[in-house]
Amino acid sequence: MDNPVLEAKAFVKSYGQGKAAVAVLRGLDLTLQAGEFTVILGPSGSGKSTLLNLLGLMDCPDSGEILFSGISAGHMNEEEHARLRNEKLGFVFQFDSLLPEFTVIENITMPARIGLNPRLRPQALDQAEARARELLGGFALEHLRERFPHQISGGEKQRVALCRALINRPTVVLADEPTGNLDKRNGELVFKDLKALSETQNAAVLMVTHNESACSRANRVLHMLDGSITKNPEGVRP
Image (cartoon, rainbow, N blue to C red):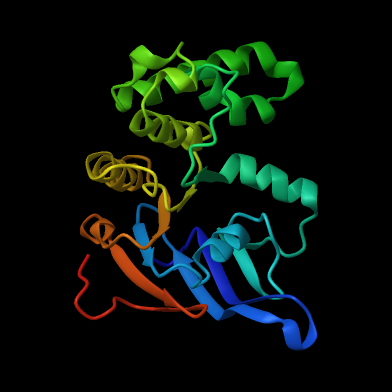
């Protein structure tokens, strides 16, 4: 536990200016380890999605620092941020965000296609498609690879989104309310899948949610309220 894959230090984030400014994060600290499934519980408006946006380098804190494997992202330019997002981070959102005009396997390989070196494109694309088939097989979804998003169920879409998040073998997977649009059965499957990702892929998986059912799968449960994080709330056990 001495080499965290991601560290957020003293995150402060506000929106608005002057007297109208609203503080969202208030000196927040967070450390994620490889192979760990962490759940952050919190009500709507507690700052959970803002935190994921900052950790995913899609926004910048007003103050504070973020480190990936000990390297600060604060001095990187936007191109370097984009490369880091593509190579080291996987994202799973409440809405699957699959591209409707592409097949399942094309959606999964999209992050890999974006990061391809043009000189190595044919060989690398073959490798990406092989990786996509491997991931689909792991989720028992390989029979869906040539279908389009409108031809599969909501639970299947979210599991395809998990495959897409893993295509580039990220060290960190960030999940924002990934079961918010699923029924209880499919939601439990996604919780199980995220736990398996941390164990089999050795990724640090961070999920923010208001669904306490996720706690039974987590290695660590944190609670977020008014822009701050505490340890397990009373009565909640991972």
